[in-house]
Length: 542
Image (cartoon, rainbow, N blue to C red; front, side, top):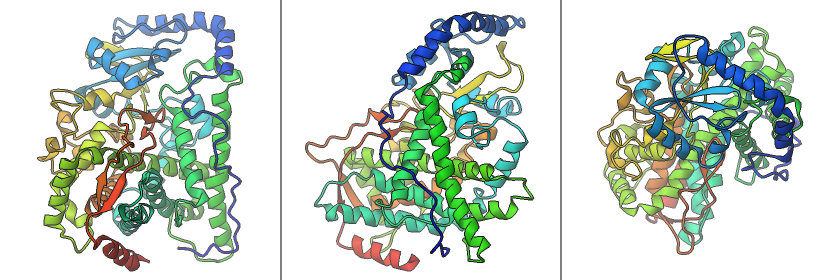
């Protein structure tokens, strides 16, 4: 790690809650603005619908009618994935929903997903320029939020250089260390099984440290480090402000001109991201200016190529913010769902541990070379990802021109969403879909990255990482992180529920990225050798 001593860390973030309810979707000011704008919106709203449906001989896909002005927005305010699943059963695998003035097409089958997002990827891979996510928070610079343009292409090219397979191999030692450190910290926090523990913050810190190493060449020393709470809070606030149905402003443009809590939150989040991650870039910049050694990381690379790539300070702050938000939320959530889920399935846990003991033994930790031989452990991970995909709707795509698909019109600027909940609960592809059953993946020997490229879309393991040209660029990074963390938790602990501390697997936290609600479990070391092995592994990477 680089020597940052004597260089101030630029951050004035308050790491406690700011007095708002993260689960709140509507505010008095938003609804007041809606009433005031209603009359103005009503005529334009119906003119818009008429224009879209009458502009050709084709009609848009059928779907629920919704309410005047706001469309189906209110019907998606509570467990929206279940409502979308119900509509898929009624209207089919391709149907339309109006959210305010915005036409949204919901994709609920692998075949349609491939046809639109892969085969027609040139048309169906842009992004809607959302007011809160794109314009307010990312200021038009976010990799995942930006429509196709030169800025997006430049930023995506830079990002891919840090996320392809060779880069993943380069950082495997980091993922190895952080997975081991997380398990060791859990062992200490649980007092070797004597105390109950909520493992969520430890999983969050593990994912956070992996991305901090890639992006800034630093790591946090413990879950008490202020940067842990700051970074995890920023990521969760981003998810709650930018979920597909988290605010009306993105779908009723006139609301942009009225004061609202969500707009204020978006503006504050932008400021906090610049303050936190832009401040860390400036810290590295100061080190470089003083001739100090700096780590080989994304931030130092951005500083070296800024003139060549015509990057300003905001470009760099938003690129690194996109990495920190996207790279932490998914992997941390899957680890947390595993931690919440597996104690309720002791027979599945035992089978995975027997496989680990047969392949790895009890004298070392599982590593990346063991993955291909631990088919049941891999199946456990894939089943967690199917059942508890953190993003029940993939990041919305947008059409860049009109498209006629199977006799139905999908107009330009239509938002396309991938309904992963319905796809993952298809009774034909996944018999008894509500049942947690890793055995359904036993014959699947591919990684998720490999599976996403299968010609038969119905054979994809899951759709957690999206599809097509905008598939998550960090899929290989996420897979390796998750594998090392989960396999080592299984190797180290008997994970158990405790009387009076039932784990709720139905409720979840978040409006976009889903995480379990807080819970506590017991972590009993599987034998007296666990602490010794963990200590020895950490000494090797110290």
